[in-house]
Length: 631
Ligand code: FAD
Image 1 (tube, rainbow, N blue to C red):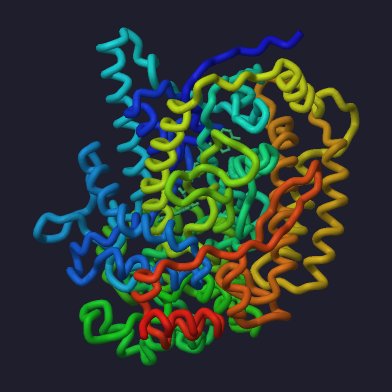
Image 2 (image 1 turned 45 degrees about the vertical axis):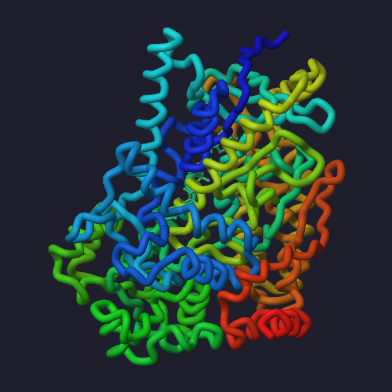
C-alpha cells in the first residue's frame, strides 16, 4: 500500500500568491487552523513578478480620484461584462487593503509630501497605481510573508509551536479535491521533491492558484500556470465563466527567441514610453476606437502635454486598455510595418534621461541588458503581444468568493476566479483584486467552516482513486511524451485560439483538443517518483486540456469581439452579448457550455455613467430601463 501523510486543517488555501496569502492571513486571524500550499517555492508566484503596481483610488496624486471613478474605469476596461458587484467592492475596498499593507510593513514609493505615490496606467483616468519602482509584487509578497511569520511568532508564544495555526507546504502540488457528497472534505497532492503523497482533510478550501498561460507558447506566465485551480473547481462540480477572455499583454519581449513572451511592464508607457512602427511612426493614434475617442489625445503634442498637465489634455493612445494596444500591434506587424523580429518598437530612450529610466524602471533596464543585450536608455525595445492573464475563472459569489455550482466549502480568489474584470483587466487591478477578494475569501471560508455542525469525511476509496490517477503515467511503458503533448497543445491554442479568432479555426481547435484529450490518457513519464518534472507535467496536462477546451468552446460560441476575445468574423461588440456570461461545467468528462444572464447593474451604479456612453454598450431594452430610472 502507498504511504500517505495526513493533515487536518480548518481552512486549506491552495496557492501562495497574493490572493492565497491574504486569504490565509484572514483565516488565521479568524482563529482557524490554516494550511497554505504552493506548487513552487514559497515566495515564487506570479504576484512576485508584478511590476507596475496595485490600483487603488486613494487620490494621493490627483485628489479627484475616488472609488466611483475607479469603478467606472474598471467597467469600461472590461467592456461592461464585469460582475458589477465585484467591481464595486474592489473599487471601494482596495485603498483600505493598501493602507493595511503598510501596517504589515510595506514600503511604497512616496510623493513629495510623504503620501503613497501613484502612477499612471492604461485605462485608469488618474494616477492610481501604488508601486515600489517596477518591483511592486516583490514588496507585496514580502510584506504578506512577513505578516505570516509574525503570526507564527505569536503562535509560538501562546502554543509553543510556530506552526500551531498556520503552516506553509511549499513545492507541494494538489491534484484532486475530495468531496463528501457535495461538501468539500479535503485536498490530495504530492511533494514535488520526494514524490510522496499528502492528504489535507479540511472542510473549507480556498483556490488561489492563479492563471492558465502555459497552454500558450508565447506567454509571460511561468511553468506553474497550468490552470490547476480552474480544473479542480470544474471537477468538484463548480462552474467557470468568461473563459473565452484571455489577456494578451501588448508588450512582451520578442527577441531573442529564448525569452520570447517575457513581460515588458506597462509602466514603460505609463512613464512616457511610446510605440513606433518600422517607419518610425507613433501608430497608436490610428487605433483609438470610437468608445474611447473622447478620452484620448488626437495629436502627439497633446499626448505629450498630458504627462505634465493631465487636467487640460487628453491621455496618449499608448495608454488605451491592453486589448486595444495588443490588436494594434498585431495589425501593424501584419501590415508589414513590424521590426525584424516581428514586433514593434517601444521607445523610452528618447523620452526620458538615462538616469531617470534606470531609476524608474530598474528591472526593465536589467532585463533587456542581460537577456537581449539592449540598453533601453539608449535604444528602443522590440515588443509584441504575449499571453498574460485569464479574465475567466471560477464563478463565485461576489461578496464571499464561494464557488457557484454543486459544491459547498469551495472558495476562489485572485486570478483563478472570474467576473471581476469582465472581458479585459486593467493593469494594476489584479494586485488590488488579490488583496480585496483574498481577504474576503479567507473570512468567508472561515465562517463556513465555523458554521458546520459535522465535519465532512474523506472516503478511503476516493483517496485510492486519487493515488491511482497520480501514479498512472509512471506505470505506463512507452506512451505519449508529456513534453510533446504540451507543445502540441500550445500550438493549437496559439495558432487557433489566439489573439485573433475565426469560426473555422476554433472548430478545428476543438477537434484537435479532443484528440489531445485522448492522447493524454496514454501519457507516460519515465523515471521514478523522486523529483520528476516529466511526471508533474503529465499530471498538469489533464488540467490544461480541460481548461483549454472551455476557452475554445466559449470562444466559438461568442459571436462578437469584446475585450480579450477578438473574432475576425464578428469584428464588433454586440449589445445582446453584453448581457451573457458563458458558463462552463463538467458533465462526467464532457465540457458543457451554457448561457447565463449577467446580473443587472444596480441603479445607483449605472447612474455613474452618461447615457451617451452607455448607448455604446447596452441593448435598447436596457437603455429604456435606464431612461425610466433617470426620468
Ligand atoms: P499567483 O500569484 O499566480 O499564485 C498562484 C499560486 O498558486 C502559486 O503559489 C502557485 O505555486 C500555486 N499553485 C498553482 N497550482 C497549484 C497546485 N495545483 N497546487 C498547489 N499550488 C498551486 N498585476 C497587477 O495588478 N499589476 C502588475 O504590475 C502586474 N504585473 C505582472 C507581471 C508579470 C510578469 C505577470 C506574469 C503578471 C503580472 N500581473 C500584474 C498579474 C498578477 O501578477 C497576477 O494576476 C496575480 O499575481 C495573480 O495572483 P494570484 O494570487 O491569483 O496567483
